[in-house]
Image (tube, rainbow, N blue to C red; front, side, top):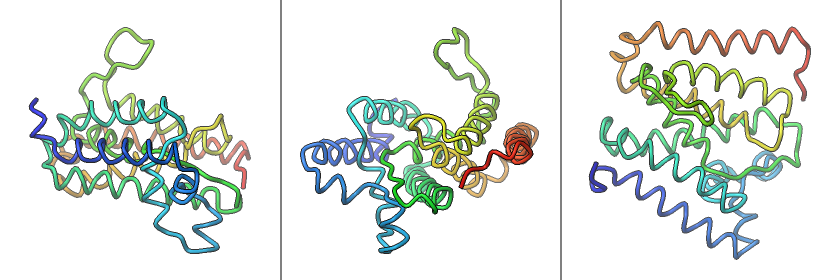
Length: 221
C-alpha cells in the first residue's frame, strides 16, 4: 500500500510524534496537554479531552500506539476514505477521554495521556466491517478472528476499569472501541446488518461482563 493512500494516518502519526517529543522536553507543555479530571470538571479545560492524545508517558508508549495506528491505518483509511478515517480517530479520542472523565469523576487527581483511545476506535471500527479477519496477538502463534479479539478486549476493559487494574486507561479503551464501532456502523450500516451476528456477540460479551461486575459489587467510585 502506497503511503499517499493514507494521508490522515501519516498526518496523525507525524503530529502526535512531534508534539510528544516536544512535550518530553517541556514539562509545562506536557502538563497543559494531558487529560486531568480536575482541570476538565472544575476549570472547564475541555480541550484536554483531545490534546491528551498528543502526549505519551514514555517512548515505548508512543511507539506502541503509533505502530498500531500505522499498521491498521495504512489499509483501513484506504477502505473508508481519509476524511472518514480522520473523523473516526478524532471522535474516538474525544469519546475515550469523555468515558475516562465520567468513570473517574470523583477521582479528581486522575490524569491520563496517550492516543490509545483513537487507536482503539480505529481497531473497533475495522472489527465491525471485517469481523472475520485474522489478528495476531502475542504470544499466540496463530491468527484469531477479529470479533473474538474484540469481545475479549471489551470484557477485559470493563473488568479492568472497574477493578482499577495496573496503570492502563481501561475506561478510555472501552469508550474508544465502542465509539469506533458505532461511528463505522453509522457510516456503513450495510456492514453492520451483514455482520450482525458478530456485532451482537461482541456487545453481548460486554454486557455479560458488566452484569457480572455489578453483581460482584466491585464497582469503585
